[in-house]
Image (cartoon, rainbow, N blue to C red; front, side, top):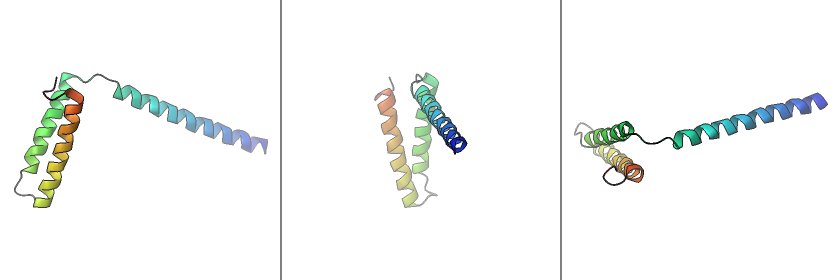
Length: 86
C-alpha cells in the first residue's frame, strides 16, 4: 500500500513538473521581442491572406471566411506592432 502511494505521488510530481516546465516555455516564447523579420513575415502573411480572399476560383463562402481570417490577422498585427507597424 505504501509503495503504491509513493508511486502515485512520484507520478503526480512528474506531471506537475511537466506542467510548470511547459508554462515556463510558453512564457519565454511570449516574452521574446518582436523583430523586424517577424513583423515583415506577419505583414507578408496578411498580404497573402488578402490575395487568397480575392481568388475568384474559390466559392463566395470560402472567400468570405478567408476575409474574416484576414481581418483577425490584421487586428492582431495592429495590437502587436501598432497601426503603422511601429
